[in-house]
Image 1: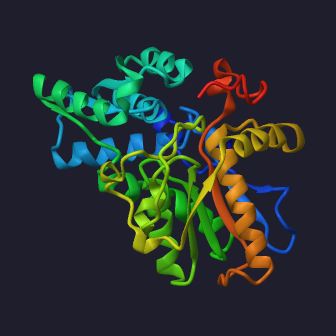
Image 2: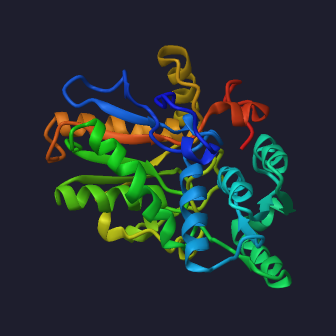
Amino acid sequence: MTTHREPLSSVLETIGETPLVRVHDSPDEVPVYAKLESFNPGASIKDRIGKYMLERMLERGDVGEGGTVVEPTAGNTGIGLAVAAKQLGLDAVFVVPERFSVEKQQLMRALGAEVVNTPSEDGMGFAIDRAHEIAEELDDAVVPQQFSNPLNAEAHYATTAPEIGDALDGEVGAVVAGCGTGGTLMGMARYFREKHPDTHVVAVEPAGSAYREFLGDDVAHEEYKTEGIGTHDIERNELFDPELVDDIRAVPDREAHEEMSRLAAEEGQLVASSAAANAIAAKRVAMAIRDGDIDAPYDTVATVFPDSSERYLSKGVYRSFEEWEG
């Protein structure tokens, strides 16, 4: 965000302090506000954890300067870690399932990282295992492991949530966010629940994802096109604490696709499918607060738009739903 008035010494100083913008399609009585995370230098919310996690891990001695970061990632975390790694004197290797965005993989390589692809059909679980194998083969290598590292959620507790709170004068009635690792929502939930214990917290996932199993629901595991959120194996998602969540809402791909197009055409928001899913869920929460179906301490809902649709143009996100490649 262009709020800086003096020259900065590093791109790392530009991470965070992103704009918080009203979602126009939300009810006037209970507006929804979204953090526009594409304003970060790596163009996604994952820049926050890239900087925060690596700085803390270097401070703790988990890895030394000149060491290597090895991470399984669908893309944006790799970009965020790559932006930070070179500036902090680290090498980076990322293990990425083949089906994920070509744009993201090209950017990781452009930032000086090595990208190792794994078969898409083997899923993220296989990529996680392969990352640990690679790290064991290297001297002074560490796997930050965004799916289980508490620093992931801590980054959002320390940066994303306070920025939202400051912008809304602390009056946040509900927080809504998609869960891939769960770090964003968990950090925000802890922060706002400390401010007001009745803050309503909603997790968002694609239809076909298994997060609702945390609440005891039976879920039919299906493939989905919405990228960056969701899981097929809740045992891998160690950060998610169901005690901090009031509800988990599943958004079908077709609805997310329609909302992506609407956000661009009506609100000038060039955001991707996870942001569209967040917008849909956040607006429904806002309407429920307005109608008295949800009791929230304030008449505002906060969410995040994690990245830009430009990362997914090769997958046809603005073509017909049938042409959109998951």
